[in-house]
Every structure is written in structure tokens, then in C-alpha cells.
Amino acid sequence: MDDSPRTPSIGERVRAARRAKGMNLDVLAGLVGKSKGWMSMVENGRIPLDKRADIAAIAEVLEVSADTILGGPADDVHARLPGINLVRLREVLHEYSLDDPPDVPVRPLDQTAADLRTLDTRLRRTDYDAMMRTLPGVLSELHAGAHLAEPDRSEALRQLITACGLAVIVMRHFGHSDLAWISADRARQAAVWLADPVWSAAAAYHSAHARPSANRSRALLATPRIADELEPHIGDDPMAHQVYGMLRLSAALAHQVSGEHDAARRQADEAARLAERFDTGDDPQAWELFGVSNVGVWRTMLAVEAEDPGEAMRISDRVDTGALASRNRRAALHMDRFRALHMLGRDKAAARELQKAERLSPAQVRHSPLIRETVRDMARVKDPVLRGLAWRMGVI
Image (cartoon, rainbow, N blue to C red; front, side, top):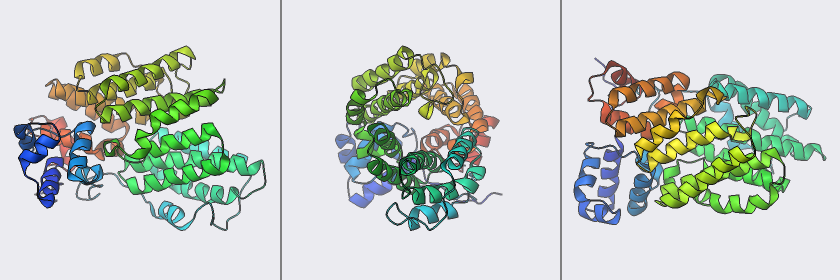
């Protein structure tokens, strides 16, 4: 018999935070614009709290971070979740800074650039263990490289922003928002030293996604303004267009979690027009894979967050998954199709979508608090695929 502790549901965390604040259910429901019955069902686990905007609103009223409600990474052993060795990465991020870099030799920067390309390939293949064997050392070198003479100094700073962006994604997939935030802030500092508007915008994108979007962090909410400020600088530089496009998608998410659905739609539409207008197609080398298919992945997620599962399925059906050069992005699409199908009451079909996502990127799926909450709500379904997923996520 498995006596592993069950991870608390999001609803249980909401109840604990509400009681700690001394607030009754009526008041909380009224302040977030919901009925008392809806709030009660959330706390009792009868309906899942799996929309970013709802989580953000409740966290704001209770004066806690969304991280508190979502919960940190569950115990890797008890919750059967994938883990990675973060000792070296923590040491680099905690011990060193651009002002106080490690005393290490810096290889020719074409060699560190080659390492970054390999790291990006490993990320797309979700080979996180291999990444952790290389990424900390590259980060150390690039911290030191920021003190080289020009033009190597600027190249090292650009590479450092790229390396920190890779770290943000991995840490986010494993639920380590603290390390993701430090990585993003290190990229921001490098961008300040570099003083290039495109790379500053790229670093701002990493900051916007270092914490769960339900936190409505200042970095995420700033993306509409940052995209506007970048627009005059994009010229004919492909990377600038790609950074600008990803910021428009981020701006759409910022509006969505703030309940501004029309503004979110306008931002996403602009990103879609940009992807088509500049014929970026689905370039596997595009910055953050900005292109027609990845825009489709984002718009699927935005439709789910807008509680329009039919539209989410229509959008996702048009996405060419074979054109997405990343297992992570393909997994993200299946994860949001899972959520949409659950909203449509098609739980068995939803379970198959989540199974596809898990095969592509186990850590990304099993560490997602939104997915875990929906799986918890579905665990009553007598489906072996779903029960297996629930067990691996530690919710049963």
C-alpha cells in the first residue's frame, strides 16, 4: 500500500490562506466577483481552480502570491516527479554576479556559442540532465567573459542573456521559480550592460515568464509597453521581429490574466499577423521558436484561459505540430488541448492528450500546478490512463 503523502489541492491552499487572513467565504467570493457556492466548491475540490485569472484575483484579495496558492514543487520521491541536480547551477547563480564574476578561464566565444546551440538542442529534446552537466560551466565562463575587451565583451553579454533564458525555461518546467527569477534578473543585468534595445527586450521576455503568470508580476504586466517601445527598433532584423512577436504574445497573456479579453485578443492577432506578414513560417532557429505554429500554441492556451474550449480546439486543430522543433512546445499544445477537452466534458479524450504531452515532456506536465489541479478533479474517472497520470503526479 502506498502511504506517500497526498499533495494539497489548490482549493485547500486557498482555504488555508483565507482562514489565515481571518476572512469568511462570503467576503472572499464577493471580492473576487464569484458566488459563495462557486468559492465553496473550489475550496472543497468539487471544481478545479485552473484559470490563471481566477488564481490571480484570489491571490490579490488574500494578499498572498499566486505561488502560495499554486504550491511549490512537490516532493520528488513521494510525488513521483522527475528531478534534476541543481547544485552547480545554484552555486553559480547564488555565488557570482556580473560585478563579482568567478575566476575562471574563458574559452574562445565561438566555443561557448557552440555549447549554447547544443544546450538549446537538448532543451528541445527535454534532455535536462545533459543540460545541467554543461549549463553551469557555460554560465560561469560568460560571467567572466563580460569583463573581456570589446568586441568579445558584447558577445559574451549576448550569450549570457541566451544562457539565462535557457535556465529560465528549465527552472520553470521543474517548478523552481526562485532560480528562474534569478536567471532572468541576471539576463536583465547583462542587457543593461549591453545597452541594446533588442537584447533588452529579449531579457524582459525572460523576466516576464520567470514566475507563474497567475502572479501578474510587474515583469509580465510590462510586456505591452515593452513591445510598444521595441517596435521602432525592429527594422529588418529577423531576431528583432521574433522578439517583438513573442512580446506581443506575452502581452496577450498579461491582458488575459487581468481579465482583459479583448485586449488579449488584439495582441495575439498582432503576433499572428507578424508571423504571416514576414513569412517566418516555422524556422527552427527562430528566437523562442516564434512562427505560425508557435503562435497557434499560444492562442490555444489563451482560448482555454478565456474559457472558450471550442475555440481552443479549433485553433489547435490547425497547428502543424510537425513544424514545432521542440518537444516542449508540442507538449504545451497537448496540455492545453487536455484542458479544453476536460472543459467540454470529454475526459477520456482529454486523458489521451495529456498522455501524449507526458511522453514528450514528463517534467513539464507533472510539475504544472494547473495540470495537476485538473487531473485531481478528473481522478474520479475510471480510466487507467488517467489514473496512472494522477498517480505519477502525486494527486492520488
